[in-house]
Length: 230
Image 1 (tube, rainbow, N blue to C red):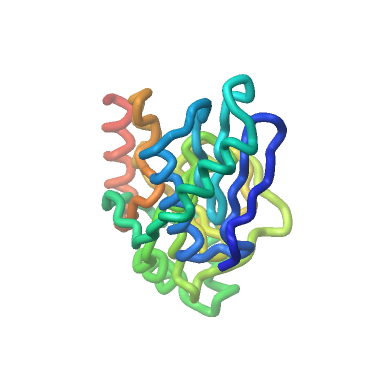
Image 2: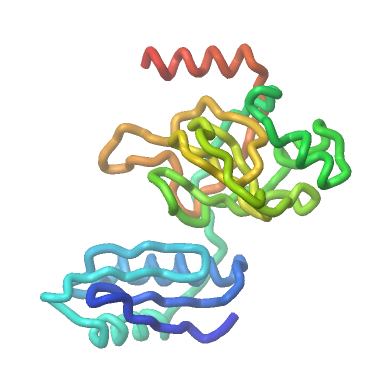
């Protein structure tokens, strides 16, 4: 992991980057710095946004500036203590019914596994919430088993339903909106990621652990009815 790099973003933010490649060490440093700034927030800071290998610190340019914010961050870094992140354990249901998993066969073919072996490998993954991005509620999870890691598709597919469980490389995601994606669609979850609580709008927090549980179509439809009727 390289020395933290600082980059001024427009007139209102500083980006602190810990590494070029995604790693547990780099992400732990991102979260540790995020926590350190939360514990000792300098005047003018509006929010911090953790990502895979970097942290964006946004501020009010009328109240402070890049130099002041960078100096404070460097002080935080001097006493920074990284540790293994232990978030809340989240359990997510997923149905691998063929109509919900249009790319399951393609993943099986690309990896030389049977469809059931792909499903079992997905269920056995060690998943952690790394960041939010791209769209509201899109929580990027690390931990896809190496034997089912496949690249993104050459072109995205339109109108992928909300709740789709998708994978690309070492990452997994549960879609929250009907949107295009170039990731492989291997199942669908009936669990709501949007909570309806404005103080905690999404189910996951960065650092949470996620376990997937296989359900059949009847259970999926029953769970969906409960969500629809409250």
